[in-house]
Length: 111
Length: 119
Image 1 (cartoon, chains in turn yellow, blue):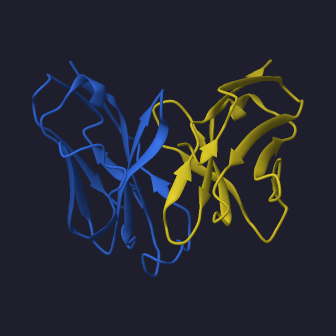
Image 2: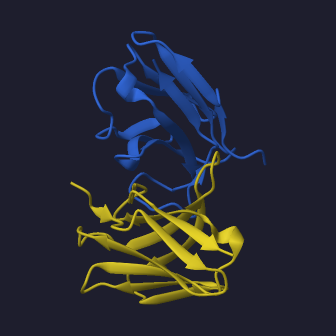
């Protein structure tokens, strides 16, 4: 049973517009959430995270929003750039060092 | 730092053969993770170690899979015998956590992965 769900396998967005990637989780014990970005033939790299005590975290063009009551988080990328084309993994963590990843969403930034 | 090093980068083998994947974590990191990525299941955790001790192996598919961490700078993931359904990209990642109950002080750093094809 998937504890972290990314229901959109892919997403296409025009360059310069906003990209919104969504993620849902089922385990209420999760208290730390992360987004990783993955290019082909490379390992995932950390992008941004948020603790459950916050509802928003911003880093440059990237903002993560957390809605605990809905068990939902989203990643906003504004403005979208060609280099943002990648697979984005949502991940969640409870106690300890174990991270549970979603299946990923492939983002295509269109010129 | 060279980052997490994995070898080989690509492995093609025949069904029934033994496969050994290798990982060298980032120096100073004490947590090591093995993941498998497939189209169907995404990125799933197989096993993780803290201070060379296996903490959670609940993601290991079956007895054909085994992992070891003989010292802080080396880990192996072995599949014996291999089957076509084991074909996937296998990632190793490392981080630092004070104990296995505490969260990493930093994020997990991933290696480039090993693409395994079992014919």
